[in-house]
Image 1: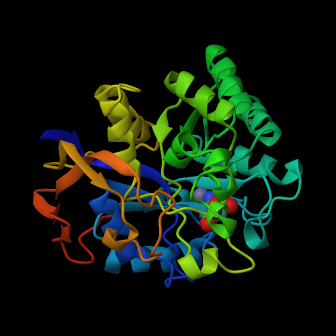
Image 2: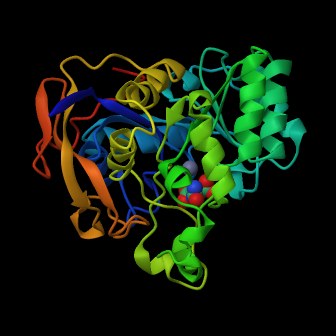
Amino acid sequence: MIQLPGLIDPHVHLREPGATHKEDYNSGTSAALAGGFTTVLAMPNTQPPIFDTETLQLALNSAKEKARCDYGQFLGAGPHNANWDTSLPTHAAGLKMYLDSTFGELRLDDMTLWMPHFQNYPKNMPIVAHSESRSMAAAILFSTLYNRPIHIAHISLKEEVLLIKAAKERGIQVTCEVCPHHLFLNTTNFKENGGNLEGGRREVRPRLATQADVESLWENLAVIDCIASDHAPHTAAEKDSPQPPPGFPGLETSLPLMLTAVSEKRLSLDDLIEKMYSNPKRIFNLPDQAETWVEVDEEKIYEIKATEQLTRCGWTPFEGWQVKGKVCKVVLRGKTAFEDGKILVPAGYGQNVRTS
Ligand code: NCD
Ligand code: ZN
Protein backbone atom coordinates (compact mmCIF):
# COMPACT_ATOMS: atom_id res chain seq x y z
CA MET A 1 0.00 0.00 0.00
CA ILE A 2 1.28 3.48 -0.82
CA GLN A 3 0.01 6.86 0.25
CA LEU A 4 -0.33 9.78 -2.18
CA PRO A 5 -1.40 13.37 -1.55
CA GLY A 6 -4.95 14.29 -2.55
CA LEU A 7 -4.51 14.62 -6.32
CA ILE A 8 -5.58 17.61 -8.41
CA ASP A 9 -7.22 17.40 -11.83
CA PRO A 10 -6.98 20.89 -13.34
CA HIS A 11 -9.16 20.17 -16.38
CA VAL A 12 -12.60 18.54 -16.10
CA HIS A 13 -16.01 19.14 -17.68
CA LEU A 14 -18.79 18.59 -15.15
CA ARG A 15 -21.63 19.61 -17.52
CA GLU A 16 -23.47 21.69 -14.96
CA PRO A 17 -25.43 23.81 -15.78
CA GLY A 18 -27.16 22.50 -18.87
CA ALA A 19 -26.22 18.88 -19.58
CA THR A 20 -26.59 17.06 -16.29
CA HIS A 21 -27.71 13.88 -18.04
CA LYS A 22 -24.00 13.51 -18.98
CA GLU A 23 -22.60 14.53 -15.56
CA ASP A 24 -23.21 17.00 -12.77
CA TYR A 25 -21.29 18.33 -9.79
CA ASN A 26 -22.42 15.33 -7.75
CA SER A 27 -21.55 12.50 -10.15
CA GLY A 28 -18.43 14.24 -11.46
CA THR A 29 -16.91 14.88 -8.04
CA SER A 30 -17.83 11.33 -6.98
CA ALA A 31 -15.92 10.03 -10.01
CA ALA A 32 -13.06 12.34 -9.02
CA LEU A 33 -12.82 10.83 -5.52
CA ALA A 34 -12.98 7.30 -6.96
CA GLY A 35 -10.08 8.30 -9.19
CA GLY A 36 -7.93 9.64 -6.33
CA PHE A 37 -8.63 13.35 -6.91
CA THR A 38 -9.60 15.62 -4.03
CA THR A 39 -9.67 18.79 -6.14
CA VAL A 40 -11.06 19.35 -9.64
CA LEU A 41 -11.11 22.52 -11.73
CA ALA A 42 -14.23 22.72 -13.91
CA MET A 43 -14.30 24.16 -17.43
CA PRO A 44 -16.76 26.90 -18.46
CA ASN A 45 -18.19 25.49 -21.74
CA THR A 46 -21.51 24.62 -20.15
CA GLN A 47 -25.01 25.72 -21.17
CA PRO A 48 -25.08 28.61 -20.51
CA PRO A 49 -21.32 29.10 -20.57
CA ILE A 50 -19.73 30.52 -17.40
CA PHE A 51 -18.54 33.98 -18.34
CA ASP A 52 -19.94 36.62 -15.99
CA THR A 53 -21.14 37.18 -12.43
CA GLU A 54 -24.54 35.64 -12.97
CA THR A 55 -23.39 32.46 -14.71
CA LEU A 56 -20.46 31.95 -12.30
CA GLN A 57 -22.94 32.16 -9.44
CA LEU A 58 -25.15 29.60 -11.16
CA ALA A 59 -22.31 27.07 -11.36
CA LEU A 60 -21.01 27.82 -7.88
CA ASN A 61 -24.49 27.40 -6.37
CA SER A 62 -24.75 23.90 -7.87
CA ALA A 63 -21.22 23.10 -6.78
CA LYS A 64 -21.85 24.25 -3.22
CA GLU A 65 -24.93 22.09 -2.97
CA LYS A 66 -23.60 18.98 -4.73
CA ALA A 67 -19.81 18.70 -4.77
CA ARG A 68 -18.21 15.89 -2.77
CA CYS A 69 -14.59 16.93 -3.37
CA ASP A 70 -13.07 20.39 -3.54
CA TYR A 71 -13.52 22.36 -6.73
CA GLY A 72 -12.80 25.52 -8.65
CA GLN A 73 -14.79 26.89 -11.57
CA PHE A 74 -13.16 28.51 -14.62
CA LEU A 75 -14.53 31.57 -16.37
CA GLY A 76 -14.58 31.52 -20.17
CA ALA A 77 -13.19 34.27 -22.39
CA GLY A 78 -15.68 35.64 -24.89
CA PRO A 79 -15.82 38.60 -27.28
CA HIS A 80 -17.68 40.85 -24.83
CA ASN A 81 -16.47 40.05 -21.32
CA ALA A 82 -12.81 41.18 -21.30
CA ASN A 83 -13.39 44.09 -18.95
CA TRP A 84 -11.99 42.17 -15.97
CA ASP A 85 -11.74 45.04 -13.52
CA THR A 86 -14.06 43.58 -10.92
CA SER A 87 -13.46 41.06 -8.14
CA LEU A 88 -15.00 38.30 -10.26
CA PRO A 89 -11.68 36.60 -11.19
CA THR A 90 -10.84 36.09 -7.52
CA HIS A 91 -13.83 33.72 -7.26
CA ALA A 92 -12.81 31.64 -10.28
CA ALA A 93 -10.15 28.99 -10.84
CA GLY A 94 -8.84 31.01 -13.77
CA LEU A 95 -9.70 32.12 -17.29
CA LYS A 96 -10.14 29.55 -20.06
CA MET A 97 -9.54 30.79 -23.59
CA TYR A 98 -10.69 28.72 -26.55
CA LEU A 99 -8.26 29.90 -29.22
CA ASP A 100 -9.22 27.26 -31.77
CA SER A 101 -12.70 26.54 -33.01
CA THR A 102 -15.59 26.79 -30.60
CA PHE A 103 -19.04 28.29 -30.72
CA GLY A 104 -21.43 30.61 -28.97
CA GLU A 105 -20.39 33.01 -26.24
CA LEU A 106 -16.86 31.63 -25.87
CA ARG A 107 -15.92 32.14 -29.49
CA LEU A 108 -12.88 34.37 -30.16
CA ASP A 109 -12.80 34.89 -33.88
CA ASP A 110 -9.57 36.84 -34.22
CA MET A 111 -6.55 37.86 -32.16
CA THR A 112 -7.86 41.36 -31.43
CA LEU A 113 -10.33 39.61 -29.14
CA TRP A 114 -7.49 37.87 -27.24
CA MET A 115 -5.69 41.13 -26.47
CA PRO A 116 -7.99 42.69 -23.84
CA HIS A 117 -8.16 39.37 -21.93
CA PHE A 118 -4.37 39.14 -21.74
CA GLN A 119 -4.29 42.82 -20.81
CA ASN A 120 -7.01 42.83 -18.16
CA TYR A 121 -7.24 39.42 -16.51
CA PRO A 122 -5.33 39.69 -13.21
CA LYS A 123 -1.72 38.63 -13.78
CA ASN A 124 -1.65 36.56 -10.60
CA MET A 125 -4.61 34.42 -11.75
CA PRO A 126 -4.13 31.62 -14.28
CA ILE A 127 -4.99 31.80 -17.98
CA VAL A 128 -5.46 28.40 -19.64
CA ALA A 129 -5.48 28.16 -23.44
CA HIS A 130 -7.07 25.53 -25.61
CA SER A 131 -4.70 26.16 -28.50
CA GLU A 132 -3.49 23.51 -30.87
CA SER A 133 -0.42 23.56 -33.09
CA ARG A 134 0.19 27.04 -34.57
CA SER A 135 -2.38 28.80 -32.41
CA MET A 136 -0.38 27.44 -29.46
CA ALA A 137 2.66 29.26 -30.81
CA ALA A 138 0.54 32.43 -30.97
CA ALA A 139 -0.64 31.91 -27.38
CA ILE A 140 2.98 31.62 -26.22
CA LEU A 141 3.82 34.83 -28.08
CA PHE A 142 0.94 36.55 -26.26
CA SER A 143 2.34 35.39 -22.93
CA THR A 144 5.65 37.11 -23.74
CA LEU A 145 4.02 40.27 -25.17
CA TYR A 146 1.85 40.72 -22.09
CA ASN A 147 4.49 39.37 -19.71
CA ARG A 148 2.23 36.93 -17.91
CA PRO A 149 2.13 33.16 -17.40
CA ILE A 150 0.07 30.92 -19.66
CA HIS A 151 -0.92 27.29 -19.19
CA ILE A 152 -1.47 25.29 -22.38
CA ALA A 153 -4.23 22.68 -22.09
CA HIS A 154 -3.91 19.09 -23.34
CA ILE A 155 -0.90 19.10 -25.64
CA SER A 156 -0.84 16.11 -27.96
CA LEU A 157 1.70 16.69 -30.76
CA LYS A 158 5.46 16.38 -31.10
CA GLU A 159 5.66 19.92 -32.52
CA GLU A 160 3.80 21.23 -29.45
CA VAL A 161 5.98 19.59 -26.82
CA LEU A 162 9.15 20.64 -28.69
CA LEU A 163 7.96 24.25 -28.95
CA ILE A 164 7.11 24.39 -25.25
CA LYS A 165 10.52 22.92 -24.43
CA ALA A 166 12.21 25.63 -26.49
CA ALA A 167 10.05 28.36 -24.91
CA LYS A 168 10.85 27.12 -21.39
CA GLU A 169 14.57 27.06 -22.21
CA ARG A 170 14.26 30.77 -23.02
CA GLY A 171 12.52 31.51 -19.74
CA ILE A 172 9.05 32.10 -21.16
CA GLN A 173 6.37 31.65 -18.50
CA VAL A 174 4.61 28.72 -20.14
CA THR A 175 3.36 25.53 -18.50
CA CYS A 176 1.40 22.66 -20.00
CA GLU A 177 -0.62 19.54 -19.34
CA VAL A 178 -1.08 16.27 -21.18
CA CYS A 179 -4.05 13.89 -20.97
CA PRO A 180 -3.60 10.18 -20.34
CA HIS A 181 -5.54 9.41 -23.53
CA HIS A 182 -2.86 11.22 -25.54
CA LEU A 183 -0.19 9.17 -23.76
CA PHE A 184 -1.90 5.78 -24.09
CA LEU A 185 -4.00 5.97 -27.26
CA ASN A 186 -3.17 6.81 -30.85
CA THR A 187 -4.66 6.35 -34.28
CA THR A 188 -3.74 2.64 -34.23
CA ASN A 189 -6.32 2.17 -31.47
CA PHE A 190 -9.05 2.68 -34.06
CA LYS A 191 -11.01 -0.45 -34.80
CA GLU A 192 -9.86 -0.72 -38.42
CA ASN A 193 -6.24 -0.63 -37.18
CA GLY A 194 -6.69 -3.38 -34.61
CA GLY A 195 -7.91 -1.33 -31.63
CA ASN A 196 -11.37 -1.07 -30.08
CA LEU A 197 -12.36 2.54 -30.73
CA GLU A 198 -14.83 2.99 -33.53
CA GLY A 199 -17.05 5.69 -34.99
CA GLY A 200 -17.93 8.49 -32.63
CA ARG A 201 -16.21 6.84 -29.68
CA ARG A 202 -12.85 7.89 -31.08
CA GLU A 203 -13.81 11.59 -31.35
CA VAL A 204 -11.92 13.83 -28.96
CA ARG A 205 -10.30 17.28 -29.16
CA PRO A 206 -7.40 17.44 -29.61
CA ARG A 207 -7.70 14.35 -31.82
CA LEU A 208 -5.74 11.22 -31.04
CA ALA A 209 -2.37 11.59 -32.72
CA THR A 210 0.22 9.33 -34.32
CA GLN A 211 2.48 6.90 -32.49
CA ALA A 212 5.41 9.25 -33.24
CA ASP A 213 3.58 12.07 -31.42
CA VAL A 214 2.82 9.77 -28.48
CA GLU A 215 6.46 8.70 -28.26
CA SER A 216 7.66 12.27 -28.27
CA LEU A 217 5.33 13.12 -25.34
CA TRP A 218 6.84 10.23 -23.34
CA GLU A 219 10.40 11.23 -24.35
CA ASN A 220 9.77 14.80 -23.23
CA LEU A 221 7.84 14.05 -20.05
CA ALA A 222 10.17 16.42 -18.17
CA VAL A 223 8.66 19.30 -20.18
CA ILE A 224 5.11 18.38 -19.12
CA ASP A 225 4.01 20.06 -15.90
CA CYS A 226 0.65 18.39 -15.27
CA ILE A 227 -1.38 15.32 -16.09
CA ALA A 228 -4.99 16.43 -16.64
CA SER A 229 -7.86 14.16 -17.59
CA ASP A 230 -9.87 16.61 -19.75
CA HIS A 231 -12.75 14.49 -18.41
CA ALA A 232 -15.33 15.29 -21.12
CA PRO A 233 -18.26 12.95 -20.56
CA HIS A 234 -20.88 12.33 -23.23
CA THR A 235 -23.27 9.39 -23.01
CA ALA A 236 -22.56 6.22 -24.99
CA ALA A 237 -25.74 6.87 -27.02
CA GLU A 238 -24.51 10.36 -27.92
CA LYS A 239 -21.08 9.02 -28.90
CA ASP A 240 -22.71 6.38 -31.12
CA SER A 241 -25.11 8.84 -32.77
CA PRO A 242 -24.67 10.28 -36.31
CA GLN A 243 -23.25 13.53 -34.86
CA PRO A 244 -20.98 12.31 -32.08
CA PRO A 245 -19.71 15.03 -29.72
CA PRO A 246 -15.94 14.92 -29.05
CA GLY A 247 -14.68 13.96 -25.60
CA PHE A 248 -13.58 11.09 -23.36
CA PRO A 249 -14.32 10.52 -19.67
CA GLY A 250 -11.07 10.26 -17.71
CA LEU A 251 -11.43 10.93 -13.99
CA GLU A 252 -11.46 7.26 -12.99
CA THR A 253 -8.81 6.01 -15.42
CA SER A 254 -6.07 8.68 -15.20
CA LEU A 255 -4.43 7.53 -11.98
CA PRO A 256 -4.61 3.76 -12.68
CA LEU A 257 -3.07 4.34 -16.13
CA MET A 258 -0.30 6.53 -14.71
CA LEU A 259 0.36 4.04 -11.86
CA THR A 260 0.62 1.30 -14.48
CA ALA A 261 3.23 3.43 -16.27
CA VAL A 262 5.07 3.82 -12.94
CA SER A 263 5.06 0.02 -12.49
CA GLU A 264 6.57 -0.22 -15.99
CA LYS A 265 9.19 2.38 -15.01
CA ARG A 266 8.09 4.82 -17.69
CA LEU A 267 8.10 7.49 -14.99
CA SER A 268 8.82 7.53 -11.24
CA LEU A 269 6.28 7.83 -8.45
CA ASP A 270 7.86 11.21 -7.65
CA ASP A 271 7.19 12.32 -11.24
CA LEU A 272 3.56 11.25 -10.86
CA ILE A 273 3.15 13.21 -7.61
CA GLU A 274 4.79 16.25 -9.19
CA LYS A 275 2.48 16.19 -12.24
CA MET A 276 -0.74 15.25 -10.44
CA TYR A 277 -0.29 17.27 -7.25
CA SER A 278 2.64 19.67 -6.70
CA ASN A 279 2.72 21.34 -10.11
CA PRO A 280 -1.05 21.88 -10.51
CA LYS A 281 -1.16 23.13 -6.90
CA ARG A 282 1.53 25.72 -7.69
CA ILE A 283 0.33 26.72 -11.18
CA PHE A 284 -3.29 27.18 -10.09
CA ASN A 285 -2.39 28.55 -6.68
CA LEU A 286 -4.50 26.05 -4.72
CA PRO A 287 -4.83 25.90 -0.94
CA ASP A 288 -3.48 23.12 1.28
CA GLN A 289 -5.93 20.40 2.23
CA ALA A 290 -5.21 19.38 5.82
CA GLU A 291 -5.43 15.66 6.72
CA THR A 292 -5.91 14.64 3.11
CA TRP A 293 -4.41 11.60 1.38
CA VAL A 294 -5.08 8.75 -1.04
CA GLU A 295 -4.31 5.08 -0.31
CA VAL A 296 -3.39 3.03 -3.33
CA ASP A 297 -2.77 -0.70 -3.68
CA GLU A 298 0.10 -0.42 -6.15
CA GLU A 299 0.19 -4.21 -6.73
CA LYS A 300 -3.48 -4.68 -7.54
CA ILE A 301 -4.05 -5.72 -11.17
CA TYR A 302 -7.58 -5.29 -12.51
CA GLU A 303 -9.60 -4.58 -15.63
CA ILE A 304 -11.17 -1.19 -16.37
CA LYS A 305 -14.95 -1.55 -16.70
CA ALA A 306 -17.40 1.25 -17.42
CA THR A 307 -20.03 -0.57 -15.34
CA GLU A 308 -17.88 -0.03 -12.22
CA GLN A 309 -17.40 3.70 -12.73
CA LEU A 310 -19.25 6.54 -11.01
CA THR A 311 -19.28 8.91 -13.98
CA ARG A 312 -22.74 9.22 -15.46
CA CYS A 313 -21.61 8.81 -19.06
CA GLY A 314 -21.56 5.01 -19.05
CA TRP A 315 -18.50 4.21 -21.17
CA THR A 316 -14.72 4.54 -21.28
CA PRO A 317 -12.21 4.42 -24.15
CA PHE A 318 -10.14 2.09 -21.93
CA GLU A 319 -12.80 -0.62 -21.55
CA GLY A 320 -11.13 -3.96 -20.84
CA TRP A 321 -7.63 -2.53 -20.32
CA GLN A 322 -5.61 -4.21 -17.62
CA VAL A 323 -4.07 -1.75 -15.18
CA LYS A 324 -1.88 -2.06 -12.09
CA GLY A 325 -2.68 0.20 -9.13
CA LYS A 326 -6.06 0.72 -7.47
CA VAL A 327 -7.45 3.53 -5.33
CA CYS A 328 -8.58 1.90 -2.05
CA LYS A 329 -9.35 4.89 0.14
CA VAL A 330 -9.45 8.68 -0.02
CA VAL A 331 -9.37 10.84 3.09
CA LEU A 332 -10.37 14.47 2.53
CA ARG A 333 -10.00 17.00 5.35
CA GLY A 334 -10.03 14.29 8.00
CA LYS A 335 -13.03 12.35 6.69
CA THR A 336 -12.95 9.11 4.71
CA ALA A 337 -14.54 10.30 1.47
CA PHE A 338 -14.14 7.09 -0.55
CA GLU A 339 -13.46 3.49 0.43
CA ASP A 340 -13.92 0.12 -1.31
CA GLY A 341 -15.78 1.65 -4.23
CA LYS A 342 -18.18 3.73 -2.13
CA ILE A 343 -18.53 7.48 -1.63
CA LEU A 344 -18.81 8.25 2.09
CA VAL A 345 -19.14 12.03 2.24
CA PRO A 346 -22.41 13.83 1.51
CA ALA A 347 -23.15 16.14 -1.41
CA GLY A 348 -22.01 19.61 -0.35
CA TYR A 349 -18.91 18.37 1.51
CA GLY A 350 -16.66 19.80 -1.22
CA GLN A 351 -15.31 23.33 -0.82
CA ASN A 352 -14.56 26.06 -3.34
CA VAL A 353 -10.78 26.45 -3.61
CA ARG A 354 -11.21 30.20 -4.12
CA THR A 355 -13.50 31.21 -1.27
CA SER A 356 -12.90 28.87 1.66
C1 NCD B 1 -14.75 19.04 -24.89
C2 NCD B 1 -16.12 18.83 -24.26
O1 NCD B 1 -16.75 17.80 -24.52
O2 NCD B 1 -16.53 19.70 -23.49
N1 NCD B 1 -14.42 17.92 -25.71
C3 NCD B 1 -13.20 17.40 -25.93
O3 NCD B 1 -13.07 16.55 -26.81
N2 NCD B 1 -12.16 17.77 -25.21
C4 NCD B 1 -14.85 20.31 -25.69
C5 NCD B 1 -13.62 20.71 -26.41
O4 NCD B 1 -12.63 20.99 -25.75
O5 NCD B 1 -13.65 20.81 -27.65
ZN1 ZN C 1 -11.58 20.26 -22.10
